[in-house]
Length: 219
Image (cartoon, rainbow, N blue to C red; front, top):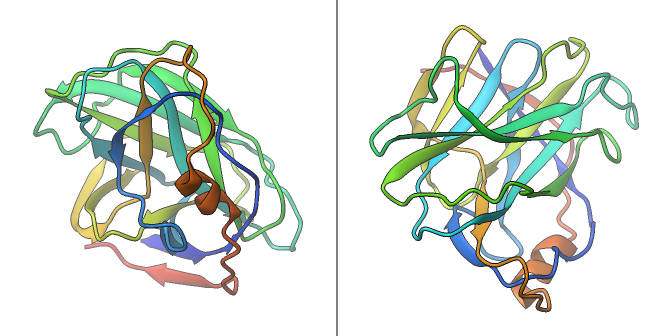
C-alpha cells in the first residue's frame, strides 16, 4: 500500500547563483512546477526515480520538492530524510541495485510546518561527471522514522511516468504512475551568475492547497 499526501508550498527564496545547465528535469512551468500530492517515504517505504542526463558535465545540484506530515501542525519528524544519488546503471535499468552503489548523499532536516512543501537544493560537493549513456537514480529513505510521521516527495506535473518504491530488501517499479519531481543541474560552479527568472518564479510561487491524506493502492 502506498500513500499520497498533499501540501502547501513554502516561499524560501532564489536558487544558488552559478552558471548551470539543466541536465534533467520533469518540473512543470512556473506556477505549477509539480503536483500537490507526494509519494510517501516512511519507516517502511523508500521512494526512487531514475533519470539520464543530456550532457556529460559535473553535477552541481539536485532539486527536489519535499514535505512532511505529522499528527500536529508544526510538529517536526524525529528523523531526517536521507537522499542518495546512486548508479551508474545500464540505460534501460528500471530500479536501483540492491544494495545500491551510492555516488553522493545528502540529509534533509525538517523545516517549517507539517504539510508545507519546500524545494530543497542539494549542492554536490563531489561534482561527479554524469554519463549520458548511463542511468542514475535519486532515492529517499528515513529509517527509524516514527510511525506518526511521513515524509513525501512531490509528484511531477508534466505527466512523466515511472517511479520505484519498496522496503530495504527490494524495489517495485510502477511504470504507469506519475513519478516524483526532480531537476538535475550541471556545469562549472566557478562561473557565478544571477539566478534565472524562472527559478525565482518557481521558488516565489505562493500556491496553496489544503492538507489532505489520501491512500493510493499500488498496481
